[in-house]
Image (cartoon, rainbow, N blue to C red):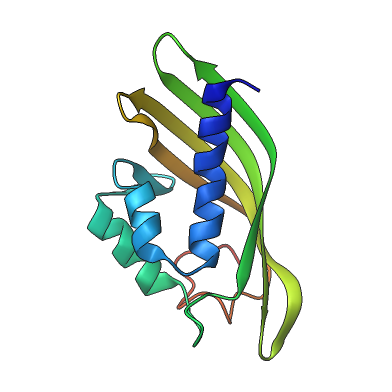
Length: 148
């Protein structure tokens, strides 16, 4: 694995850690230079991204959403000369909270784009593609257009 592929991969897994810890400020910092969303509905800007996660994701008394995001099937395309990268991956969200035993609640794909500057690699865009929806009643604060 090249240094660039490791750094891009680390950005992707950093998201899973931040969201599962309920650190929406950290998620907003990670995506602060990116467009994030589903389809044509892309948000830009740190505050808008933080507000989205705060408005849509339930947190429990320990400050977390009680989830584990698992990233798999990672495919990276890196152009070292241009300082750009693209990634596709699968994701599965597991949740276990009072009243909801451990189970997968969502699954889909990420389509990500990255760029590199003097400070290193950063997200340019994250597209969420939602393929499977289970019981999100203890995770989401509303359905927000999730497929039934």
